[in-house]
Image (cartoon, helix red, strand yellow):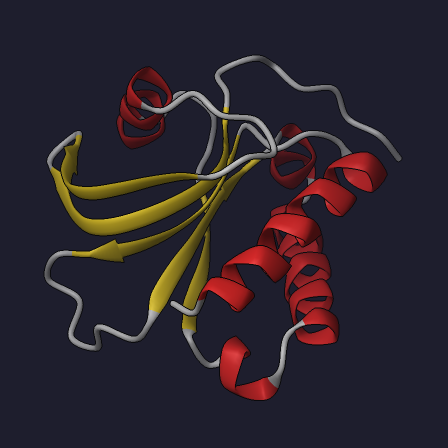
Length: 132
C-alpha cells in the first residue's frame, strides 16, 4: 500500500480515537494467501465498535471514503472488527505495542494466520475508554 495512503489512515485513526474512543488495534494487514496483493484488510478493535458493530463499521467506512481518493479506497478489501479476547488479537497485542505510531511487520504468524505484511498504527491491550 502506498505510503501516502498509510499516512492518511494513521491520521484517521488518531482523529477517530479522539472523537469515539481509543482503538486497541488499528492496522492494515496483507494475508500470505491473499489473491490480490494490492488489497489490504483494515483490522480494527475498540470498545465503541463492540457496542454497535454495524453503526461503527458504517461510521468508519464513511470516514475512510471522506479522506481517501477512490483508488486508495479500492486498496482496502474489507474492514474487519476483532472482538476483545480473540486469539488473533491477543497474539498481535503480545507481539506489537504501539499507540498512534507505525510498526511494520513482515512474514509473521499470529495465532495460526500467516501475514505477509502489516502496517499497524495502534496495538494496545489496554482497555480504552468509550467516548460519545
